[in-house]
Length: 197
Image (tube, rainbow, N blue to C red; front, side, top):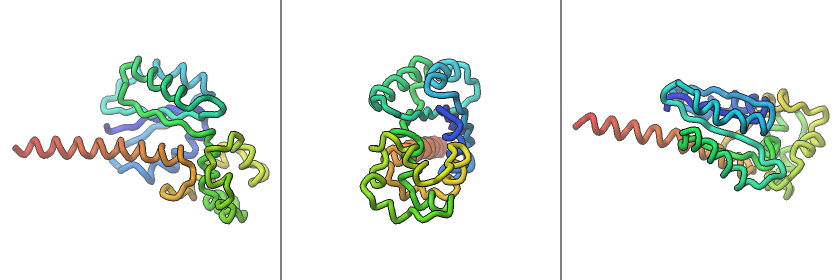
């Protein structure tokens, strides 16, 4: 794997990942984030893009919001689309319930991004488990007056701490990416050992 291609539901996720991924990925792994115009556009696009992609050593990561749907059902359907396209090695991650849950899981980042006092509220029950909020974007709009999805995602991403987020789905996303990198490193190490003998 020399390249990770992220197929995303919307532009705000791209705004986040364009800033966040360089903190996670080693420099030898390139990434490309491709936003779509919502869930339906993303799901229609997956089989076409995965079949047509010609760049070697590419691994796909599909990221979609859960919203009000069943997380297991969504993930199963997306994994199936990847397998049907011959890309069973793709990683599928679901933001529960939506991207803004990831931001509510790091109120210190929101505080720094908008210069408002919020970090102390992280101890409140709803912000300790932001994935349980079905209206995370509304919650964020209450905390940050005039919040806009794409520009807000860019501002918050610049201050996020990967190791300290209360969103379980964010942590699953990070661990999934870390595992992809580790697998690549392990494989490289095995190949290097084999060539020594």
